[in-house]
Length: 137
View 1: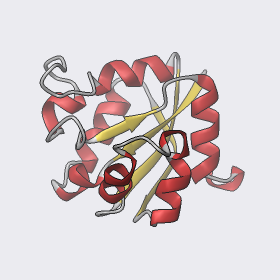
View 2: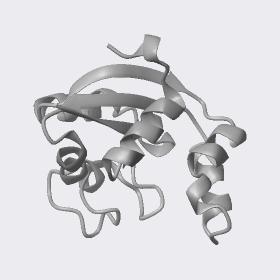
View 3: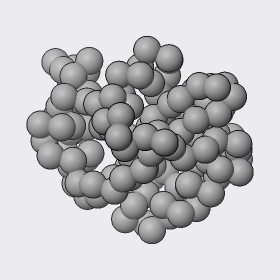
């Protein structure tokens, strides 16, 4: 069993597709072991995306991620990280496979509806960034 972090981004929560995305995770065999809806502060977004500090898109990324509420989900399952990445689809929704979250709900390359951890180390860091041990089942 493996854990990963999923984030339903502000553009997807604005479209009111949170439940549909959670259902897609569950239908794919991922179990929600932590869930919260919140509005990220600039400090939280900057801290979460610190690895991108100094890159040209950093300011726009922080602005987007703080533009509305997000849903944070700790997900668990067999091969959860890669399974979720396949389910999300390509970062660019124009290149995403039919039926993937980004093909269905993304608006653009930068407003791509969801985030998912890309490695076990990232998953651990990202889950621990947003959840404490008492918030995870």
